[in-house]
Amino acid sequence: MVVQNKIEELRSRADGPGLMAGYLDSLSLLERLHRLLLDVIKDEFERLGELEINPVQALLLFNVGANEVTAGELKTRGYYQGSNVSYNLKKLVEAGYMHHQRCDIDRRSVRVRLTAKGREMRDNVEALFARHAQGMETQGVISFDAMEEMNHTLRRMERYWSDQIRYIY
Image 1 (cartoon, one colour):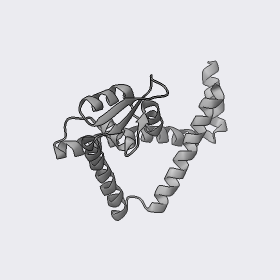
Image 2 (tube, one colour):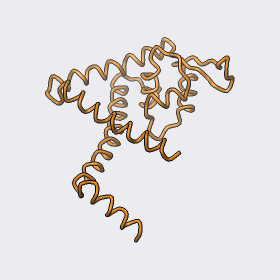
Image 3 (cartoon, rainbow, N blue to C red):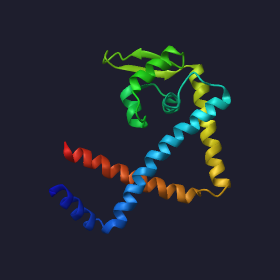
Image 4 (cartoon, rainbow, N blue to C red):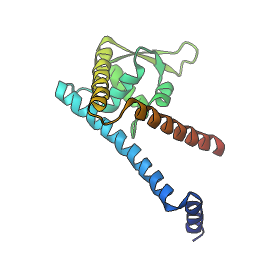
């Protein structure tokens, strides 16, 4: 009962049920959009006949790009829902999409970079994203200005959530 009272109090302070409903809708949309992104990548790879890697691994390749990074750096660059970054990196190395090398300073840390095969796969993902960005603009799905405003709002949400995590610890 105490928890329910607290929820009702917070809901009323959050500009009534309208803001709360909007917030919950945003959370749901973020999750669904991420799942749809993975499905879009999967469909593109099936169309190309590239069945060796999964969509999460494709996003890892995309986020590594021309850089040499650690698994920890990759976790902060992208969100890999329900996946183990270290496991996926190991699979990408085994399949020849990435080189890996122990860090000279911290031998526990492994740095990875794309092979030529990995760069080719990353280019496929980049081409998909470029086609979609162009298609959204030409079909009037979203304008550049609206995209900028949306990204600004999402960054503010990200900053708020990050501050909440830091506050707890």
